[in-house]
Structures are given as C-alpha cells and as structure tokens.
Image (cartoon, rainbow, N blue to C red; front, top):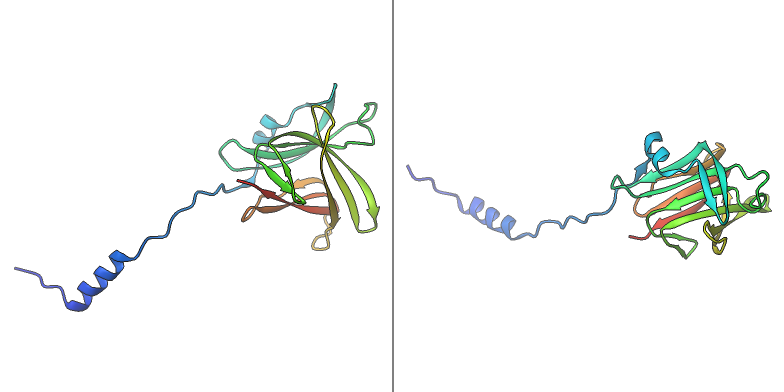
Length: 176
C-alpha cells in the first residue's frame, strides 16, 4: 500500500525544513553559591598586601556559573591591622566584571566604603596584593527592600546584577 502525502502537508514539511533553527548561545547561568562552595573559595585569612586578615565566614556571599568560576566576598575583621578604616571586605572574581564602566579583571580585591550622603556611599576597590586602587562606584540606598546585609552578591541575569552592602546597592556586569 502506497501512502500519498497531500499537497498541503508536503508544502508545510518543505517550508518547515527550510526554516533555520535558533542558534543556541552558550551563556553562563549564574546562581547563588552554596556554603560548601563558598568554603572552598573564601579564605579563613585574606592575604592583603603584607598581612593575613581574618575573615568572618558567616558574612560570605557569592555566585557561581557552575563551572568552577565564582564571584564572592566576605567581611574582614580588620581591627588591629593597617587595613582598619580603609578596607572592610575581601572580594574574589574569577570572571571579568564591569563596575561603573571600570573593568575589574579576575583576581583578589579588597574594598572599603565611605559615606557620601544620606542615600549613598562610595565603594573603593583595591588589589589585595598591593593595595592599588582599581575601581570606585557609588552605591545607592536600596529602596526596594528594607533588608540590611553585611554583603550580598546577587547572581547576574542577562549579564547584570547587584551587590548589596548594608542598605546600599550597586550594579555589576559580567564581561564574558
């Protein structure tokens, strides 16, 4: 028995076969890092210039692309160190980031904050190895939430995300 295809079905099949399939773009899908992942990346003592400053793991926050790349940070206990008053957080990025149009290369950084008004703070990033200033951004008060966090690094969506320090947030972009 021979099967005949109707002209409508045959035309539809030919048209569908000539339509290009959507190209799959492989973008990293970032998510919040869990505690065991953060323990692997956050040091108990952060190497800052010539000192090893203790970190407060309970304040650790970070994201991962699930392929062993992280963006993470933690509060440092700086009392008695030369960093006191200048740096407050240790920050690691394993992906290039754009912060306020400044490129932050993968590496280890420290950052500190300075109040600039009721609704803003200035966040200054420095290389952990030598204290060289690398980036500066103004963080604005988060009016969408009343939550206060020592540090919260949110996963990027479409390449953009927020970092929250206290009540203040600023945007960062993952540069793939």
